[in-house]
Length: 44
Image (cartoon, rainbow, N blue to C red; front, side, top):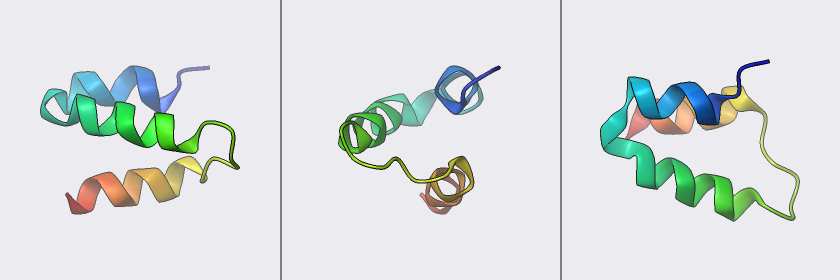
């Protein structure tokens, strides 16, 4: 299974660090569903 983490940096190289930040933020908590993360990223 391909994770958003794998494909998003390729599609949006400029927001790679932002993605990493989101991923780190979600560690140890309930990560939001990919759709939610996707919506967040589309808004930036």
